Image (cartoon, rainbow, N blue to C red; front, side):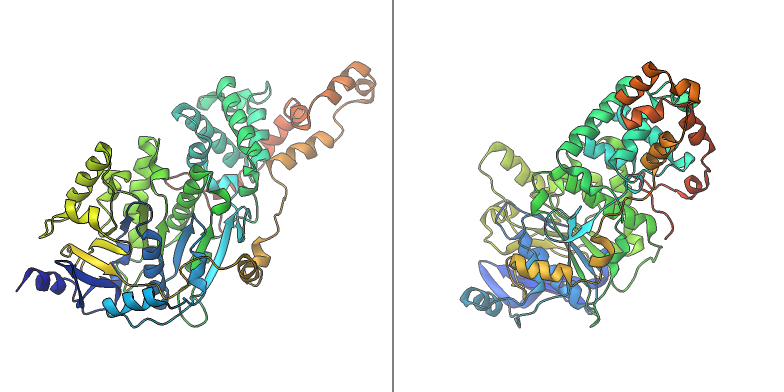
Length: 506
């Protein structure tokens, strides 16, 4: 058996599988040697990597289409704004027809069922919001760029709010509680569990103010998004493709990467164990993955690693999308058994290092991968996946199929119409500001708190007028009494996952 035949035999699966393309060998495309991924192995996680412009987005589209056709829901983060075309049939041309003929693809223009979301409703899409309580202290610390000590203090603040039943829905709730806990009345509340220094509270408050000044307040609030919406199928049985539109916030990469991690952590928290299934419940594509790992603490990385390791048994597959494997920590990379590596550039010494490191992540093969990876064309990739018995397949240089949906964005009018016609739009479109920590404070301060004699003192009244509403509240003994008397039933219902995320029972 020749080397090419041996490689082809490694992809001759008997069960359902996704078709990636045809084998390339000695510069020739072998259409009868099809390169595939077994459907049950899509929850074993994967990596799609490659330099800018090498075809990563089209690879995601190709995989997402076939998953949807097999009844598997898909989540895609659309950072550049060009994935929305998955909902519309593709357009044939000479290039598409030529690629289909080369790889023996029966190409048919097809659109797939899709929902479009937008963080906080900024941009085109159904608004995706999270409550501060649900988002949790660990991920919020990452967004606010807090250090370890400040993160621990934020965790203490969340613990206090949880146990007192003070719901942190939006940023003003968190700000109110932080201000209280650093007041003369509030300081004793945390005394027995470490306390909250004025300096650390000041950093947290300044970070919240700067965050809000950048227009980020819209991301936190209600109705909070139920991530189980991502698990739906369409009426025809195809998996729903959930597209999170991110172009409007692409200049805030740490925010959207952390929000993606919140979605994943929330799914992990809520989903039951299913073990090995015939197909995944969801495949989640984590775009611009390196942004999540940049400047991350060891504890944060450990939580990512554990979430990725354990979420497989809940039927969720995760594909990290980035430029090179070295962007992903080794402990996470070790769990990514399905690899699609597009071309890499080697123009600098750092590029050369990245190239050599990438080659070492692949099984031994008959290819000179250093040479191959720098010479791949657009829409070509080096592939290795997990076979039906869980063993790595031979490395295969592959000419990938063409997506059957539109390879580009749909127009804004069509996108807006799709969003507003969604059954989810009425549920999430309108923000709600119900009673929570801040409202409890403002209610308390409006109630009569002075005797008629005290109220007649002009100097005291004048001082109170100069204070902000929150400052009035946290300086009052009434709020201390309120905070101590709030029942802890709500707090007892809050359980927090590896990332400190919380989900109340719906």
